[in-house]
Amino acid sequence: MRQVETVAALRAALRDAPRPVGLAPTMGALHDGHLALVRAARSECATVAATIFVNPTQFGPNEDLDRYPRSLAADLALLEREDVDCVFTPSVDEMYPAGFTTTVHMDGPALPLEGAARPGHFDGVATVVAKLLLQSLPDRAYLGRKDGQQTAVVRRLVRDLDIPVEIVVVPTVREADGLAMSSRNAYLTPEQRAAAPVVFRALSASRDRFRAGQQDVAALEDAARRMIEASPLASVEYVAGVDPDTMAPWGGLGPCMLAAAVRIGGVRLIDNVILD
Ligand code: PAF
Image 1 (tube, protein in one colour):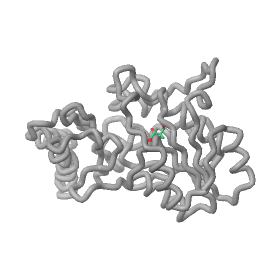
Image 2 (image 1 turned 180 degrees about the vertical axis):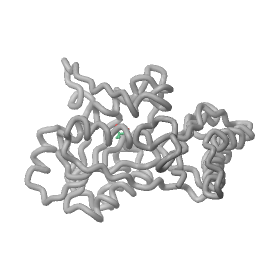
Image 3 (image 1 turned 90 degrees about the vertical axis):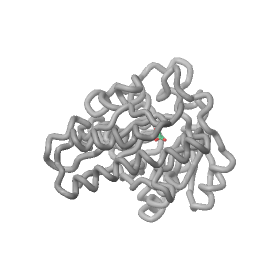
């Protein structure tokens, strides 16, 4: 596995690489959810590249940029074991050199839910993902379904900017008790960790009701919210049934994404299920 730290070295490493090239963009602190992206890429692509970059522009001023978990040596060992060909680990200065002034601003699917709770977050995501895609020019990029709104934003980004890449969405990887894997789970105290699976339990219960014929999404949102808030450590920011492409409230046709953001103690967790 080659580790490269500059855009020039990344381009040189991938220029004549066997195609298709698959890219797994990450912020490091890798867990099985990230490894699922890499494994999906490995199973479909002749060359697999991963990126590890904690992108400052997608964190708000009062968010956890400084304490975001970083474990580069362990991450590199994991990627090596997954037979990744190339890992790009740029510095902040390499990605945002002095004089950097361009931001990809997104409306549409970037506005509600996470976009409303975290102003500027998706502009930061769209900007860095556009840069990573243009730097590496992969055939496919692999993103996790856990960040359901992010996948919608990136799909729209590549469509709107004509970036020639296929976005592949990989199913959420969960702990045995259902908690979606996330680098932020590391912030949970043992007591908070024990409470956290209520998010997926509540979303799953609403999905079961949907499958049993309850199609009133407001009632399903409400039931999930009440089940989560029955846990004394949990406070719901939103539970919303939305169109998985536009993020607009579900209109009754096609699949519905039931998405939630929940604070367990001070830790903000997101998750979603597809009602089908
Ligand atoms: O999902 C993430 O880890 C990040 O948002 C991404 C896509 C790597 C962009 O920084």
